[in-house]
Structure formats: C-alpha cells, structure tokens
Image (cartoon, rainbow, N blue to C red; front, top):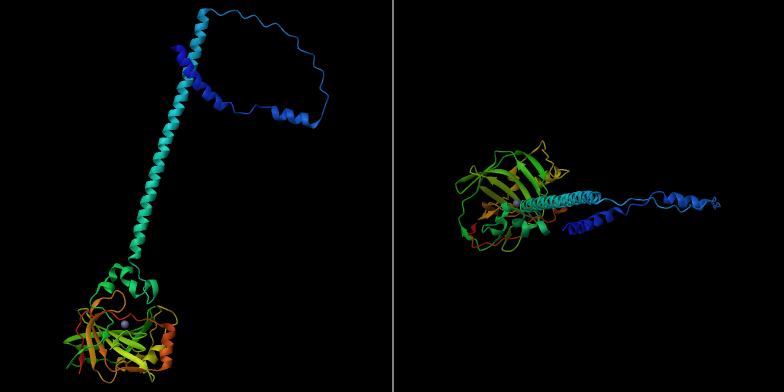
Length: 348
Ligand SMILES: [Zn+2]
C-alpha cells in the first residue's frame, strides 16, 4: 500500500517537477560568448587521477526506515501543497467565472435599459416635418401623444364638398389694432397677437391667439386648393379652439402680410417684437360667408374638437409675397384627411 501511494505521489511530483524544469541553466551564454570572441589555445589541464570512491558503510535497517519515512513525509507535504495549489486555482476559476457572469448580467441589464430608453425616446419624438420619415404619414408613430394623427375620425384638413347650405349666423369679429410678436418656428411663420381680439360664433366667444401660414392651402373646396392659406387661431375660456381659414391666391399685394414679411426674424425660433401694430381685420375678406365643420389641429398633436370656419371669399397676395414664403416653406401643408361622414355646413 505504501508503495502504491508512493508511486501515485511520484507521478504527481514528476508532473510538478516537469513544470519547473524549463528554467534555463545559468552561465552557458557567457561561456559560449567568450569562446566565440578569441580562439585561444586552451591551457594544459592535467588529467584528473581516478580516485577510488569513498567507502560508504551499509545503512542499518532502522536508518533505512527513518530515511524512507522522511521521504514519505516530504512527499506527502509536496502532495498537500500541490493539492492546495490546485484547489486555490479551482477556487480562483470559480470566482472569475462568477464575476464574468455578474458582469455579463449587468451589461445585459444595461443594454436592456438603454434599448427601453431608446424605444421610449422614439415614442416621444418632436422633430416632425412635412416630408419623409418624420412626415404626416408617420406623425402618429413618432410620439405616443400624437395617436390622433392616425386614429382620429375628426381630422383636418378635409376636402370641403357637399356642404349643407343653410342660413349660417354671421361670425361676429371684434378685432382691433394690436401689437404682435413674430417667430419662424421651423414649421411656419407664426404671429402671436396681444390679448383683446375676439370672435363670437354659435353663442361662444373665442379670443384670437395669433395666425400662421401654410403653402399650399391645406383646405380644399370641391377638390381645389389655393397657393396659400392663413389660419387665425382662437381659443375660448374653456380652452376649445376655433380656426378661421382665409384662402390666399395670387393677385394684388396683401398689406397685413407685407407687414409680417417686413418683420421676418433673421433666425429660426428667434422672437421679433416690432414696435408697430397690426390690425387683424386686414386678414379678413370683405364678405364673411363661410363653411364650417369640426376638425383638428393640422399639425401634431392633431388635437380634435377644433371648430373650423373657412371663409368662402379668397384673399389675394402678390406673386412676390408668395415667392418669399415659398423660399422659407415650399411645402408645409398636411394632406387632406378622410371626412368620415362629417357634417359640413355652408352659408347660403
Ligand atoms: Zn394651420
């Protein structure tokens, strides 16, 4: 049994030893280097006389056993050391694997969070436009708040046709000269007007907030649009909106538009506050007959329940005035939306 243990241990020791044998022997490179430089005749070295080996007396049995036990003890110490080393390595491997797993988990969680944040950001985009990837067909998928742009049944603009001709009440306009601010908001030229301008229609009062332009007109009458349209946006105290739309075609100069163009901001999103006033009445045609229907904002978030009042009489702007706007906004009109059987009324 002792021999078997010794044999097994011997193998282990040989394995260990073989790993240590690769250390290079010291001194050799220096010696060979010296020999290479000068070929000197070696000095005479007398032969060493063969000496008779010293007499080694045979060991006693007890001494032999003690020697064997000592060897066994050293061997078992080596085995123990080797095993401890192997266990330590195994433990280090387990620790390293656990660490790598933890890091991979953390990375995956981080990636998942980043993907979720990116998906969330994709659902809250605000960079809408009138063409391509961010155009009207994709508004609803760009932002969760803009679902109505695709799912709404009361969207604007529409092709106004087959209106019910009735004696529509006159819109009562109560506009006055007002100071204004002007901004190129990246989607249109937007003019905000100081408080104090009102319309009254269907027993509701709405206050003028401001006006802006689209090219071409968003509204169509029996399939036909015009070169531009002006939208005058009003709001009631309850917050409901009423839009007065004035279609613009080529012709003579439009004085109010000229004032607005004269004060165009030099930079997008920079607010210009001129010291002059405008009269919003100048935005209205002489005749006040109109079409009316319930629609929506024509830009995101496409909010519905907006009362549309589309003036039947068109107004004119000069070709130069049209050209100036088209340089800034060659296309900023939402396409016509389905009517879904909406009632359209028009003045007789
Ligand atoms: Zn508009």
